[in-house]
Length: 598
Image 1 (tube, rainbow, N blue to C red):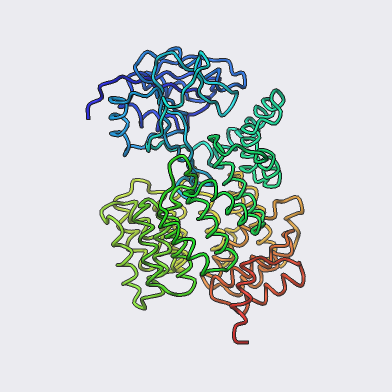
Image 2 (cartoon, rainbow, N blue to C red):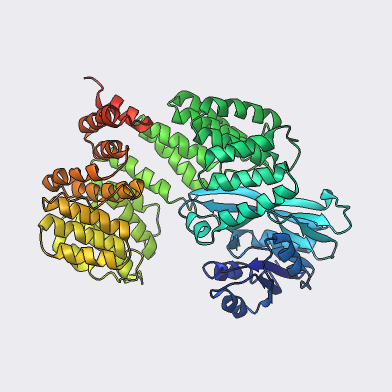
């Protein structure tokens, strides 16, 4: 479709070199000019903007997003203004919808769906919000508010009937854990919102947004307190009301206050009967509490409801792929593999980029078929076999199932197609390691460049090989771990080396992050189990005495359980209860499973 109306892109940015090029590439064929207002970048942001021919303006940051955004608007010269952030990406599948909209719209503005990625990487944890993205350039509007800015008429006579919501998607990467930490977004936002609250105490919108910041930082009790304050005497017709309702319920659920969460879901559904997301959370609470029949009923109800109205949607896929995946997990748990497979496949059809579902499907095939070549064949049918990254993914899935010899063939084919030889060498080295072909594994791992993201992991694999062999190269690998600044990895490995040598010298201390230490330790212990180095494994279990956490025995129990040692797992859970007073739901399930029939 031909674009008949012109568009100005307006952005405010600071230190966006990591994502800006992707953002601008995603909209370059939709806009006629790019206006980028920089608030003090010290990286390559400006050079990237100039490469795209952007009009770059500078603005002295004053802790006020609306001021900076309004400054950008004054330079726009086209019919429409597209509003984006530097860490956004316009969904390529929705470009035709966008062109049709600007050609024919009679409105003054349009809200698009922003899919924000959270957690460690894009795709797994995604939430949906509506944001004003398209504004008619008629000089009648401005933004107000220091943060989470809202649109307003210059003359104060705004009529929201001149605005509409569109099912056009923009992906937002700014709240991935690493990005938020790098930019110190949370502390910045909190300072601005608290300043706003001093000027307008009790403002429910500001209280809600402040709660969101503490929620994202993991301070759920503080977040809930702020949500409660905003919820008191709430007008359920205001735009943020459904988001407040669901975030407050999510807080209660994550704090383990399931009874209260269920009661609040019931109330929420009276105000928003089509809010499928609430039904999904209700199903998830029942699933978590082991009330599987109730959970199945709720997840099926989600599928009946379908996706909620766009104004309500928060959990992307609550009426489509999420309930299918949850049903798959329940059926898998009860070994109804045929039903589980149907549900996982339905989830995958509705969310084709969800590669993690294929790992669950592979587990089912591995349970269903004694002949493992059939497992390999079945998984391969989900992929394009003349695409190097697809071959790597198949190999990784097979490796997760312990089918290392079958994975080897896919890796060798991928090596002929994938340009990143360091990635191939790392995965190939890892696969050879699990086959106990240690000489070949070392040869591959040695080829991984020190600048490659997997270099640290390759060093850990080499460390384990040399530890098993009890040779002198251990010290060399430890030195390299220290050189690359992997302090936790180095210290954990040094502690393990000390124990292996019979020295039992304390390297780790109470000041070390116990969760991080335990995570690295369990990865290494699991690798020893996978290569059946049982004697060394038993010796190194002494490392748990040096990790100052009440979760050590539970972590060991889960490791045993994952590898089929159910009786040993149950005994470790009992020790955890008796010695450390630590137990969780997984521990209870391990006890039940481990002692059935005894």
